Image 1: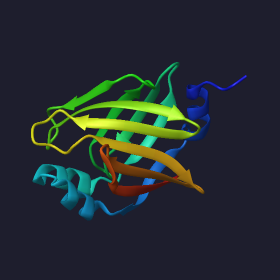
Image 2: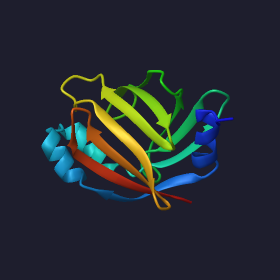
Image 3: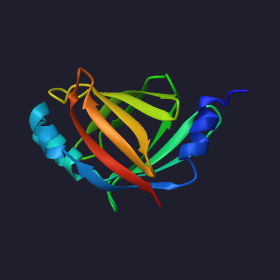
Image 4: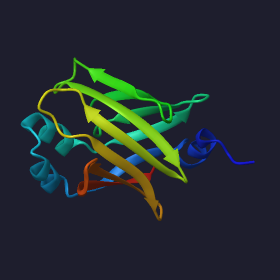
Length: 153
């Protein structure tokens, strides 16, 4: 019997802490996408630390934006659009996103609901050896991208 997507995700991603240890190509990405100052500040400083836990037919994600930085939690249901809004944050955040999970690869399609913001992104979470590589690319042009490398800790 084939494992459910949630069972498979839990086996691969849950029960450890994922720490960003390297970011590649972020400056060029921000230049190429014409990111505004707020996006530059936010995306440039992000070195997320992430923990996932299984909660029935959903996944809870706990994210620390950078060590000692702001923390937020989200709920992931594969194939279901969710919204994340934080008006208290500086800078403000308001995104809509959908996650899918297939053959061990997690894909997040995310778009900002704020005016004059970056175009929709497609973020692929895939393993290269023991590292989890997050490739964030423009949804309509995958050559415009940057990578974050995360390891279990």
